[in-house]
Image (cartoon, rainbow, N blue to C red; front, side):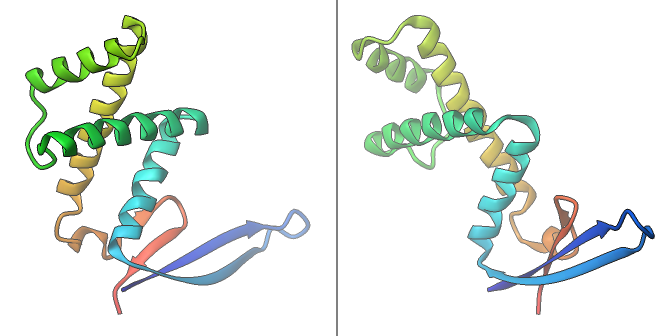
Length: 137
């Protein structure tokens, strides 16, 4: 269990003093990684886009689990098979391309974060967002 301290800074308009508030949160590394993924995605996309990316990613992962390819790298053959399945569902080619692109981008984004934070050492004093820090105690 890791402890996360959140420090929020509020500037008062009257005398420009800084007021700091300290709140403690306890979370596991997995919860921390999910928070980091969500925060990084929120920097670039709106709420609806994040939801769409995540939904497409979950559907693609479910497809990969059914094929037994969860831990394997994504192949072109697998993408073609997924494309055929979506075509049989009656989706248009444009929607299929968008859905597959979102799922693959999210997969690569997750892999990038897993590589970056694989051992957890980089999380020790690294800020997440502007005001959150992971502290090991």
